Amino acid sequence: SINPKTYEDRILLDYNQLPKILIDTLVAVEDRRFFSHYGFDVLGLLRATISNFKARAYVQGGSTLTQQLAKNFYLSRERTIRRKVTELLMAISLEIRFSKEQILEVYANEIFLGQEGNRAIHGFGLASQFYFGKPLLELDIPSIACLVGMLKGPTAFNPRILPERSIARRNFVLGVMEKQGLIIQRF
Image (cartoon, rainbow, N blue to C red; front, top):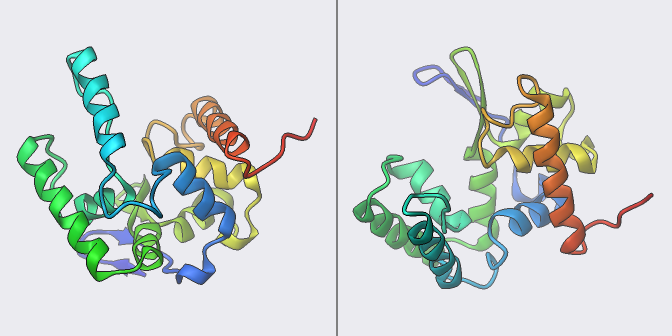
């Protein structure tokens, strides 16, 4: 599971090995219209453009999960219009060629979720083992919310280094899960 040239490590999972609550949470937090768009979300792009224009800075992204996958797999992290257009076209191409389940499977295995020295932690399978010492299928809802919350910034929300920030982000994700009807608040 490790690529010795880049120090990237993964535990590869099939789509069927991804817990449903992880998929539902990922979609609820990162791309609510994932199953209905064709690689890009016009409303998401408009929302992000308006927010960025008002702030006169890049404060919000409008990328779909498919666009994030295209960027992480094929493109640089530079923030240019040219890169964004390329990312959008590649996302459409991915959507034409692959099913939503295949896209989610690759995303779940590819996404960067932290660093341990030179070793990059990629994918939810390895992140589950690395942060919680358990296979992904054995994680409880708060742990899954923590991992999904880390997508916004794996270093900024690392539960080992910044537990308070990680807990606050996890609680935000739990709130999204509750609003979307994925969980019921029990207290």
